[in-house]
Image (tube, rainbow over all chains, first blue to last red):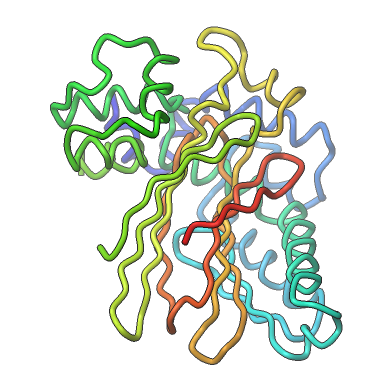
Length: 188
Length: 117
């Protein structure tokens, strides 16, 4: 079942988009989004090329928003923004400059890559849109950990968020931190 | 791993974060992951719609503030993740020592500062 997570985004969409992602796209399209985001999402599929273009647009939008911003696109998604003097000198404080960057990134992201990346990476990494407790139980089972065995979903979540709880092994701890990534690594 | 800390942040709904820092002299690797474990309102209902209308946890995003080797303040914004994607992780190579690093988890409407270390 979880081998599905290893299948590319395109293949996953061919098999049918999980209802969670379809609902999310419906909500985005109803907002409505920018023309670019609408064009990409209206077919309920995000191709590799569309994802790359979305990120490129994100970068250009931030760089064009104000002088002195240096943008890097991490391979893992998201965006990295450096504030140079030409940007900082426009503000009275570091906090004000940071807030301005946050605002630029939020605005540019909503017009370009945010929802496209959410769908692209979500479908690629978690095509079945497993919820946290579902993925965690699957992961713990894969690594042979008995942590939380027999608990309901809610009880399991409560357990792992209890500060006094210590995972039974490093593998169990890895499952708790990121069960989707851990499951992917286990099935690679 | 120089340090590994698990911390819980209460945001109305609770988000669990795990931050690890490996720190050789000239480079710092920040690895973060988060899971929107308790953004789920209940085990059987349509949590997504409930969350979208009631609490701001439909989408989360991690943010790391750091200072590069040239003294430039940088911010790494993780990709936005649907809560039902539940967890993600990312590794960022920092070219200089991280003078300051902070994980920020974003609900739909606001950033919540979280002092990682």
